[in-house]
Picture 1 (cartoon, helix red, strand yellow):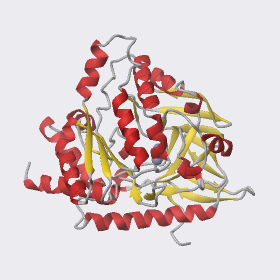
Picture 2 (cartoon, rainbow, N blue to C red):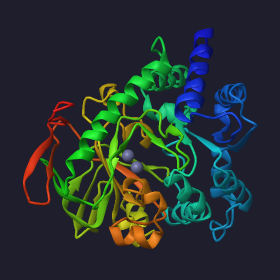
Picture 3 (tube, rainbow, N blue to C red):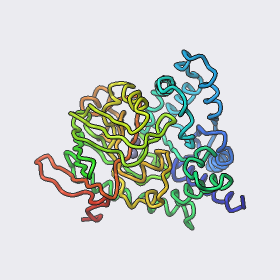
Picture 4 (spheres, rainbow, N blue to C red):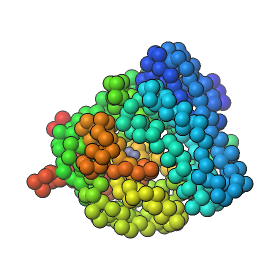
Length: 415
Ligand code: ZN
Ligand code: ZN
């Protein structure tokens, strides 16, 4: 590949360190990354050290090893998870050090494996990392998730492109979505963050009691918790450091009340979960709880997911993304939540972000639960937006106004 790829990769790494993490001199940085992303990781480390990082440590992942485990390990061993990484990650988190996660998984990695074993494995991992994830969801430190293609992922996204070009095509889509091609990517991101923040602030002033989503296959009312906060673009850590947790990001999101969701909702994009892809599914909620979930394929995977714990049957996030988002405009289905959730309005089953409630980072689990927050080992985003989706905001007095019509914002900023 020509030098221009190297140059773009370097800009991408610089964005990750300077805008995403906003890494500060004196911080340490933990990176969790697939082996294939080593060139990106090295550039990120360079920018981190140039910015004064005192240590960059990397946990390398290898999907081929995961497959080997599923092929050959004893069937009763999938609850075993390494202690070391979870322990180390917790150390970084408690210090307030930075974390960079690089996503790039093969959406079909464990397609031919027993869903019950995959569920046991994922649950054991989630349990082990629960304390770290809890700190991340309270923004105790600056963190960022971005993507780097693997061959398998690129092949899934571009099956009709010659094999030798698939990875380059996926890099191109990622660079484009992450504004790497702008003449000044850092400035372009600052502008984008400003615009999303205005939308967020506007929604925060509205103080809606509930949102009503309606389209041909969806009629769902999502009650919001009192003192909910819309969050988007950049957020402050508990120490006040502004960071952007996802690249790309096009969403503003807040906290549904775990017991106040009613109606039916149909996913509008295929869902990549637990190394499988569910093409379509419909979920019915009664008083916040999923009472029925029907998948077009892999029903067992969806059922296992909902059976993770009680909170897996309740919502933890509601997010608004216009249909004209740059990710949606690419027309590419990425089979990766980082991209697909920024192409459409979405909901998440499972744990809610404490930061979506005023002063929530400082509330105990019990206090959060009393306010209507949801707790679970999972947090699974699924896309419900489309060019047909309408959203109304409903106030406590029952009056309503349009927020979105046919997938687009129904009010201009500053009105
Ligand atoms: Zn989201
Ligand atoms: Zn989410």
